[in-house]
Amino acid sequence: MENRFTKIIEQVKNGATSKRCAVVCPDENTRLAAKHAEAMGLIQASYFEDAKQAVIAVHHGEQDMILKGNVDTTVLLKEIVHKEYGLLTGSLISHVAVLDVPRYHKLLMITDGGMVMYPGLDQLQGILNNALEAIKAFDVKTPKVACLAAVEKVHERMPETLRAAELKALSPKGVFGDAQVEGPISFDLAFEKEAAQLKGYDSPVAGDADIFLVPDFVSGNLLAKSLVYGGGARFAGFLMGARTPVVLTSRSASTDEKIYSIACSALVAADQG
Image (cartoon, rainbow, N blue to C red; front, side, top):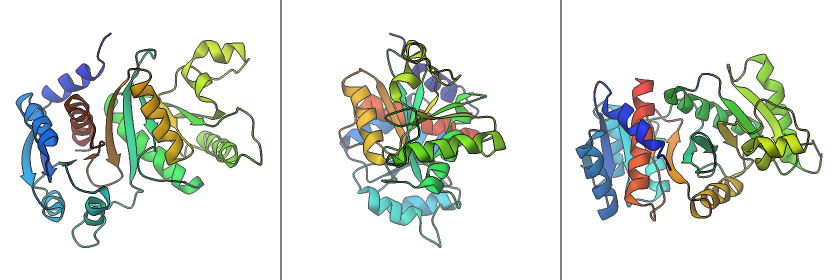
């Protein structure tokens, strides 16, 4: 099967400049991934044993992105949100996963399965805006967004369906730019056009979603890991909402997964200028 991350890697390699990457508290696997990424022309790596110093370097424009190593996410985030030298932009910080799923016809994004645990409507808007900001770098002109739920009808006892419907209602008002937002919609209908046809569900998002917006951290985490470990998907993950992307993968992530994450983050960082 074609590795769709190869195209991302080539785009970054062919860019005007490789991105300066602050590698924070590198363990052996993270250092190996950074060295491979540097040899591939994706980044110029600098190593920091202290999260604060890495964030300050980005704050002062000396680094373009961050790669998290063997440091607790809470420790790194504490420095990122610091009022004096942090990287806050006024946006919510959320996690974006990019997956290359063998049974799907293009790269897809899942958000947020790594940061915001139980988002309300306002937070879901922030999460979606971050994903839309990220997907611009992937040259998706009119992103299709699936606001996931277990069912396609609004039920008062299922608050995720209410929030999905409210997000869909905001879309025609231009709140999400040119994105097409659908919801509530179940995963099978968002992923498989034939399933939508069988259920009589008519939407341009059905079977062609670019962004799968999950109702909470748990469902996003389970969905992404199910696709990786059960569906053979390739994975990249990073944080959006700060001044620069932050590569954030699990400590069990393979070297390839870290390289894919570095490539995607470098692509987004280049698009953000």
